Image 1: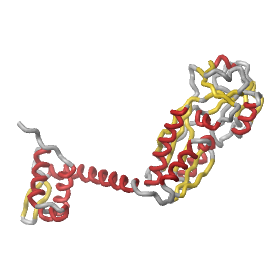
Image 2: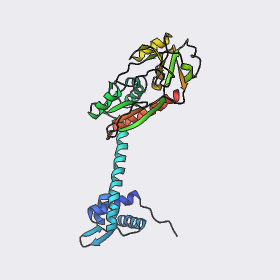
Image 3: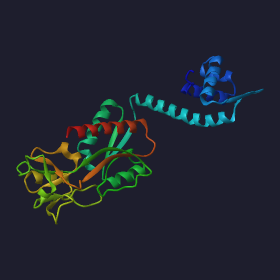
Length: 305
């Protein structure tokens, strides 16, 4: 016995057109097929589903009950296929649009600039603007329509309700310790969390503008905090001068100055955060292009570490 016919995309289009136009002849004209080709496609579809899909009357044809059930699904499938093909066609064309990207400051050290350079080189007519700010500010701007893409930090105590938004995980990294080039740990690739006892800490200011980094969170006892600054540049300078050590996110590894060294911290309770690209539910081709480029640049940053 030969294999049973399968319901094909061509068959679904023919069945849909026959139903919409009420006759095989009209469907053939709309599709550019011969009437015999339409009849054959309907016959193959009927063999595939094991039921008669149309009944003939004096005024043409109309779907049977089984045909109506199939057409309900076919309409949705064809709409999705057509939307996917249109999206691919649009993504293949040079983009000409305005796009606003909001990002928390750490993401602007390497990830966002590399992404923008790549996208603008590929689509020079695309105008991209940047809005710097903490995660909460970016989410408010996104929901208000003031930015198109928000790059935010989540995890390790930073929990946000994203149920009304669409998001992609760009990176998931463990925090690192930075020390001066003269520090006793400088030539090591890693330290154990127990090795950090007695270190002097340079930390970020605790506010709601974004994820600020304090001392290593699982230290035993009260940390010796010697300086508190909001700006990363200042923290780097203090660490480079040997005035203390600090915790940084993996996103900042490409931006470290020459006299600072980064180390992994072996900890049974690792300190991790995620970087997410967040948008409203409907994405234009420009937005999707930006998200795709962000994912690829994030993967390159992870590979270079």
